[in-house]
Image (cartoon, rainbow, N blue to C red; front, side):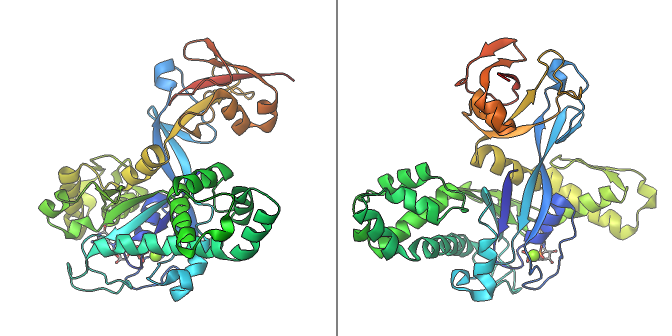
Length: 399
Ligand SMILES: Nc1nc2c(ncn2[C@@H]2O[C@H](COP(=O)(O)OP(=O)(O)O)[C@@H](O)[C@H]2O)c(=O)[nH]1
Ligand SMILES: [Mg+2]
């Protein structure tokens, strides 16, 4: 399953974002290092369910459907706060960084209101420049990658050179588990213009550049500019769309969590990502609750949503370029062998072929792939046909 890591210094709202997205019990408190152990939970992204177009009533298995919107689970990891120096162990930093090995993408949660210093201690609003946090975090993760790559580098580079081996292969074995494949390593080496035949000649700076390049490929990042409610509307609107090619989305994690909790308690109807909610029984609310919900309503009216869902979906669809496809066994009824209609939603990289989908469903199905059928059009498609978002696919295999 796809995994996204929430990273950032302490006290920026990671656990709030996490709980709002998962409604699990991550601790929320106003001091650093509340979250000592990495916390994994199930969040969800939305996709358009084919049931509407195909005019069927679906019976999903690995996901759910709410009125034609498919809710697809993803894993979310709440990593404890990282401080400058984390890669060298400061604040238990390298333990926390190791939690990110499996992550496909990172959400960097920043306190955009500037009311936490670089260690995460509360300070006057606006007295800390959040732009500095963006740089430090990337650098920490680069250093973490660099530490892993540089460990026993002399040995690896010498052995590879003397055996006329491929350095990208040796490296990929060395850093297996970081979610980087041999092609990405090869491409990065070429991009940096490093001599593949002479890895013993690579300098420390070369290795650091390689670490940084690999990190950007393996752990693409999006910024949640959180606590945006503590900024003036004009300042929020003035936020750049990107910094160093990293997208920035203002978020209101606290408001999202309040809505989720109220929804959970049966006080209101609210669908994550939507720009409105409906209070079930206004007369049952306390004055404080009414006031709180009024504030949240003002946020939704101004910004369209709390943007928590938007960040998760942007990470999935824009950053990782994934699409959702629906493999089925019966191409006319769109069912699996149990008769469930449109059972599974699979997230696959844009450009994936029908055969790659077959492998994702089951190794056997990939090994014995003959052809596939696009169930929406009834057209036969070959093994290298590129899938589109929302495709419903029947795979024919030799058994
Ligand atoms: N104003 C405001 N405060 C927030 C927001 N998100 C989180 N907080 C507060 O920031 C503090 C730290 O949040 P927490 O989630 O524990 O941060 P973490 O250390 O990064 O996990 C808590 O007091 C939260 O209520 C937000 O969107 N707006
Ligand atoms: Mg936390």
